[in-house]
Picture (cartoon, rainbow, N blue to C red):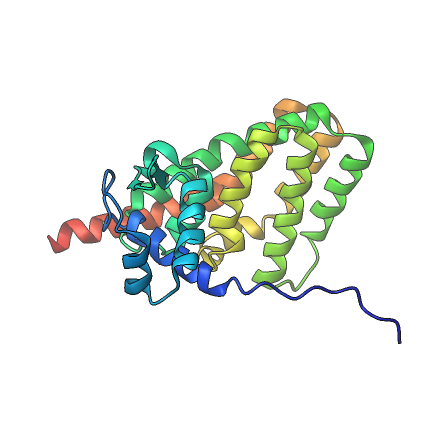
Length: 249
C-alpha cells in the first residue's frame, strides 16, 4: 500500500471557541466600542485557555476589524457597523449575536433584492457560451420532480453561484456569498420561509433563457421576480413579529 502524503490536522478548536466567545461579546454589545480589553493573561483565565490561544483569537478579531491592536499591545473594541464587512452578516443572523433585531434581516433582504437582478443583467451581458450552458443545466435541475428542500437549496446555490461567476463582478460575488450563507446555506430556518422561491422552477428557466438570449432587461426582470418571492415572505414575517412585539408592549 502506497504511503499517504498527509499532515497532522491542526488543533484549532480551542482557538475557534475563544474567538467565537470574544466575538459574541463584541457583537452583543457586552464589550462596547472603545472598550479596552483585559490583558491576554486575564482573558486566558476567564476563558480557561492558554495565553497563546488568546493571542491567536485576538489576532483573528483584529483581522475581522472587530478590535484594534495598538502600539504597546492594548486591544480596543471597534464598532463593527463602522469597520467590519459583510462576512459578519451570517454570524449576526444565525445567532452569535442573539439580540440582533429584525432591521438586520430586513437590510440584507433589501440588499438581496437590489443586487440579484443586476447580477443576472451582467451575466446576460458577459457570460461565455460554456457559462450559459452551465446556467441552463442548473435551471433545468430546479424542475426535477420530488425534490426536498435540501435538494432545492443545493440546486439554487449552484444556479446563483454559476450566474455570479458569469457576471464577472468580484464585489457582487463577495456580497452575494454572504447573503447566500445567510438565507440558504447556513441558516436552515430560512429555507421553509423561501420554499416557494426554491420551487419556482419556471422563473429559474426564465432567467437562464434571458441570459442565453443576451436580453439584459428580461434577465433583470425575471431575477427580480424570483427573489421577490422569498423576500416578500421574509419581510412579511418580520412585520408580523414587529406587530406582535408592539401589541405585547
